[in-house]
Length: 217
Image 1 (tube, one colour):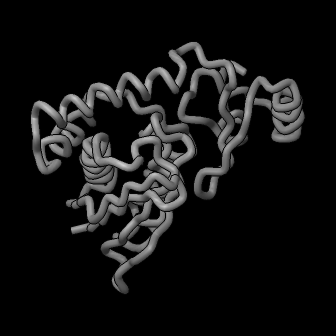
Image 2 (tube, helix red, strand yellow):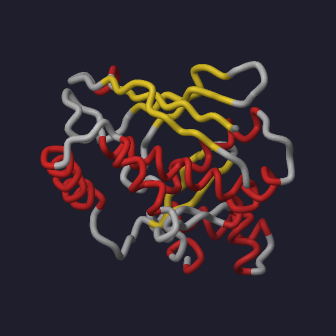
């Protein structure tokens, strides 16, 4: 339980095996018991099934989101900008934010460094993103376009708490773009461009989305 509790970004069964030194069968049985007792839950993120604790010691997510929304909406009101400043802030913040990538995610990132830039890097992004946007645990990400050489892709994000019938909170999207660019450049050791292509707010949750383009340069 300690292994799962201390990893807000989630851990895989393999991570738990390494941490506890127990066999995979023992870990599977232990995890199943914890799930039945509602002490942990799992979520499929990319190719991984990650386990999270249901007993968080930090502030409730709903409160954190409302606090953050209030800040970014005022930021936009009093410092009007096209999003460039928000993106710059996000990218520079990468050096200070304590991201909690689990061992399996870190291993996957490391493997990307040793391969040529390809579609693999872009598809792997779907696994990394939920880990560093804690305000959007239920985000849905799909690739809607990818170039034949695999050097750029357009991603669509749905089910974000920052999409409504207004663009009051779109600075969050630009901040996340900056964070994405900073993390990918750091981990892949190459130039990366992350740009907002479209923000489509809607009163209907299923119709709201935003698109970003990631280019490996």
